[in-house]
Image (cartoon, rainbow, N blue to C red; front, side, top):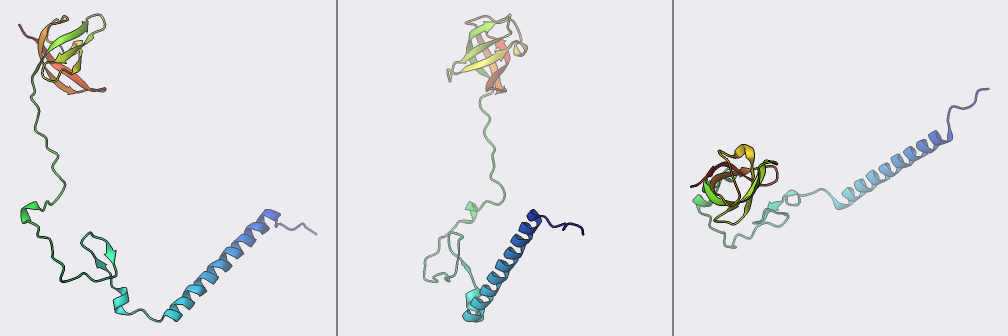
Length: 153
């Protein structure tokens, strides 16, 4: 006779499956018994309310409670505007350091005293240390970057 095709692992999986099915049936029967014991739900039990904070509750709102007045102008439809006033485009500063061999340097902004990177490709003429310059800024890979750098005489 041929050996049974059912291995130990298959038997264990089948046992677990039957046990899970049995537990599910028991939970279903328990829920049904609780429902019958509780009786049918009334319309009032099915209602839910939203309070002033937007939370769902089962208690109706108090009609005597003073409501907040909201001005029509304060209501904003759609996404918030993210428009920002453009900053002063042309800045002035002094060259802190510039290496022509490597092709980069730094400019110290006169108003904010921050150090701004400058690359040789963004220059309009030759540049040396301690030169006074005008420039515009844009966002680079690692921070602000000076562009359109011009020597001031």
